[in-house]
Length: 84
Image (tube, rainbow, N blue to C red; front, top):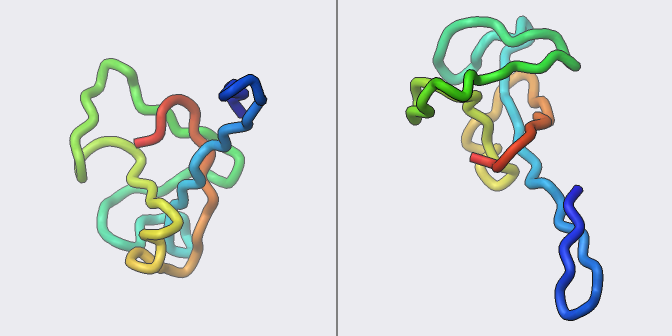
């Protein structure tokens, strides 16, 4: 969490929750290839790799978009850095 000060009062800014939808075998449910690691493992995108929509990145969705991407398993994703 990040603590921000506003008008001399401390306010906590929470990290936006993002989700990943997969099949039971941890493979993509809505297109794509590959298999995600087990829960608790981190995936990293090389900082030298350009992020290109629908080609690179982790393809996470926001709570309000989740209904459009429903599948057998929904994981709460943790991330570091700025949200997409």
